Length: 173
Image (cartoon, rainbow, N blue to C red; front, top):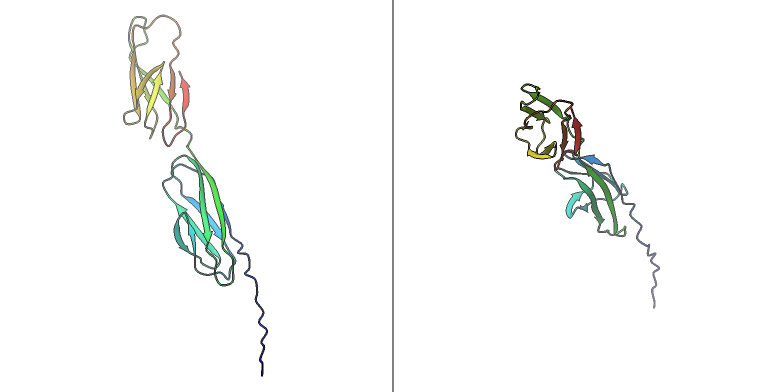
């Protein structure tokens, strides 16, 4: 005697893996929101780290990123019912606008005298130029002396060269 049984073999389904991330500024936290079919459980690999899926969602945060363009790789290894899937989230980390440049002049502004110029840029580090002289900020300030003033109008040009947090900027007085 013979016995036969017919078995239906179903194809694995495609996993619907999606990821989004918003552009941020230096110092902010990057948040990558990842979604996958709600019935899928287990883990995703995000940025080479295993992260648990919670009701079809993973919220992945990254701290301390410098300026640049970032691509985060996201992988689902597949399971008994779903095929493996990959996606990426891309975002940009931008520098902040430079703080205001404050230019103060100390001493007299009389012909033949010296003029001390003090520049303050709150919370800034790095270098500035004052009339083409490069000076390193110390506690958000830099000072220089313009010697032997001449009669007429003197323009003081200041350029903050920026750093890993702030963009460059210019001011004059």
